[in-house]
View (tube, each protein chain N blue to C red):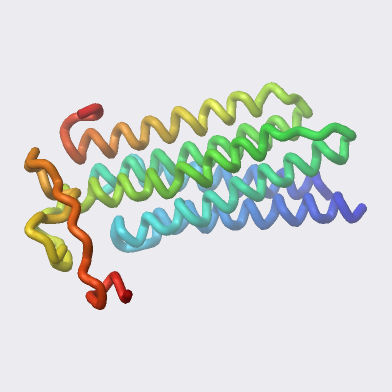
Length: 132
Length: 89
């Protein structure tokens, strides 16, 4: 009874999260804010469904680990996809966005199309980004 | 109780899928389309897993896993293509 209740709650919460994530895709004003909705809410929604599916398998007497694999994979890949989409957006709106200075001789790596080798350069201690 | 929750989850994910489809068709820019397709993949994985839970079959998890992998690779390939005009540099 309690297991049934927990699984149902997981399913309902997952559904609401996924719905919010997909609605955010329609509702939010521009791409950089829109990135937040699916990468966070929808990923959580799928995680809830996979947990519920594991719970249902355990209720029926078997244990299955496939779901954990899918969850792990989704949680690993969602930020990477998000980062790539943000980089693509930056590259397409090059002139219109104001990016902070990198503090080096080179431009932002996304916008830097030159083939020159990158020299590693450490931030001085005490500068922003490296307190000590 | 689980049946009702399953129906609710199906409805939520289906509605989310329709919203992603809308955003894919009426998108202001190409990165938006990639994002919408990526979200669609996530919703489809959830739908496949839910269907596997309803039909009580273990066959669908492999499908969901394959979908997760190919969805990730295709999203990254699309983004990489519009970023550099090339996928493998």
